[in-house]
Image (cartoon, rainbow, N blue to C red):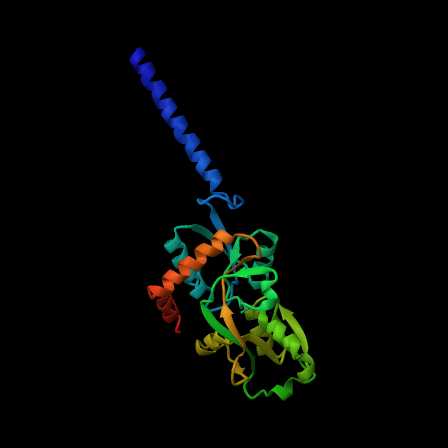
Length: 259
Ligand code: ASN
């Protein structure tokens, strides 16, 4: 009888130690705990920016260059993360408010953004173009409206040459809304990253034409954290990016999406 009691007691002790350990480890996994290595990072992204991030309608999962880079870097560096595809402007807001640890969203690295974000090394280069219905000329934009996406480099460029071309600007929350506005004639043109609109034109999804010969403001795309925050995550990202550049994995990811 004594033996059984001792055994029961031992089991109870082992189980409660295991429960305590389990409980402890799950609490250190919380996204709010910034100092722990076991942390699950919260990463935000755009939601309709093919081929960098877009919903695969068959699998109902977000896929694309950025999604693959994030997975490859996290695997290389051994960290966990959860991805939230909420839109570009929402991602910037989430990083600035501390709701997100970082963002990866085909984000153009520029001096203005460096005032509020710290960026990784660049993993892709791109600039912006103006797209419109076939046959449109830049001079046709005078007195019309053009479409831009909130918070983007395309929006900044559109604002900077607005008076030169004499158009007004309509602001949209995502790229498909901009394309739709041009398609239906609400706006005469839209401003978008070259590789993104070119991809959608190539797949037949968007029936627009690029007006300018060369993209303007070509700059690198980078992973970003809030300025002065999450330095360890940025270091891990850069270390992982370096490794996937060296191993050829980044090249493979880009090739998978036609680059
Ligand atoms: N390249 C755009 C920007 O940095 C990003 C985007 O539209 N997802 O503003």
